[in-house]
Image (cartoon, rainbow, N blue to C red):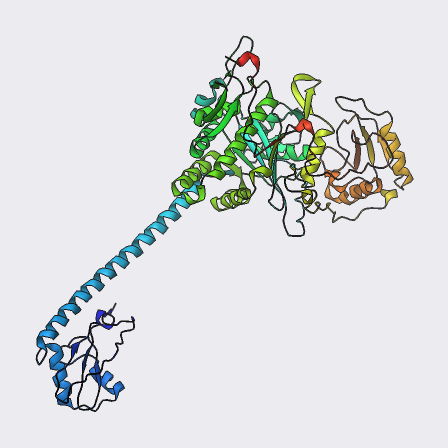
Length: 608
């Protein structure tokens, strides 16, 4: 490449230009010799001259002498300059000194060559490390499995940002009981069901506030009976019709996207992402974290009992224990020893709170080995919705969650009661359940540790506005159905007729009652196609129904108002009172993330 060591080796400032030194000797005084930095100075009669310490060129002259002499405007004679050159090469006076200096120069050139090789080696090392890092990043990305966010239409739109440009973050976490892998059969048993579609045994919604200062988690027990919308499996193209069944079946009806759509239909909360994890994934993550602390009030052994088969196998003595791996999975799956699905949800919340505290206490993001292990385990264990299906996006998500302090995290379970149709199932308890969903929709903190300013701090999500203009009321047909009945209460007689008459008085002369029973908790206005959305919104406005209750549905043929159990009386839809921070009902069984002394009671038959 034409590199010349000699241009750099004698310079004290890295520029290749040396300083000067005055010689006090007389006209014929000897040369002072080379200085410590490799320069040599000599003097003639009344003059000062600087020579570079480059050594002699092949023709016996010092490289660059003429240029340097011109720059110094020297008038020294050719013979004097020749004498100086002789001195510098050891052929004149000071020869021994010149020889020593040459040796030093050679040593310096050797040192520079070594440094150049070291620099080249470091460059190769850095390139190799960067290459390896890129390959590892690609490897982690390849680990991640992803799928469509939604499996059905809920009609919900992402809420608008608050004044600071922030929106809440809602993530649905799903624990699958899939036995499709040999590891899962080994961990979860039931090898006879290995080929069955997976069920969503664990379902919890993580809500992070728009300002990222608090987080709320709500679990729904797996045996809760709900309305499941029509869902499509995007991999096979199979369409599953709408049904009323327990919520853990949703995973088998089109995958996690169907579970998300069901949650949106039930809660009215827009959900951004989903994540699923199976048995072996739980074990892998528990090992990567290093285990967490849990506590039981009594000795526990979740084993098969007469008439009650199965059991997780969890066996612990009373008190606190550090669990990980298979034992962590047993804790999360224990149902009978914790008395019910509700007890299991509480035990899962204790585990999650403890896990969050453990992660926050570790220097995960400064410990390369720990971070690598967690990244490897997480990307292999999780399946996520496609919009967060990269390492970069998952890392960004983790950073948002990392900022929430433990005392601002609240774990809850949806308030529920025994299903009157099947005592082994549950149904939402109203109005408690809706109170929880309202707080999520309004982005109101479940805790009070942020002060009063937390309540309703984020801007209320904007109601959807149709691009299709509404027709005149007299030209709009409306079907009104009575949905005021519920599992606990009978329907209000003639409710559909009364509301239809209210619409007639507002100009909707085509509105008429329909006797089809349509029990549902929330009042809705449904429409079948986009060209009727504006009409449906106009009907809702005329009665004071929020536009978030206007939903597209393939189950209706025209604008259809279903008067729900939340509107059993009155001519105008009742206005909801604004929720306050910490206003969750007692039936939600809340546990704050900072509670370190939480301990699970054990159902008596499973004590030892």
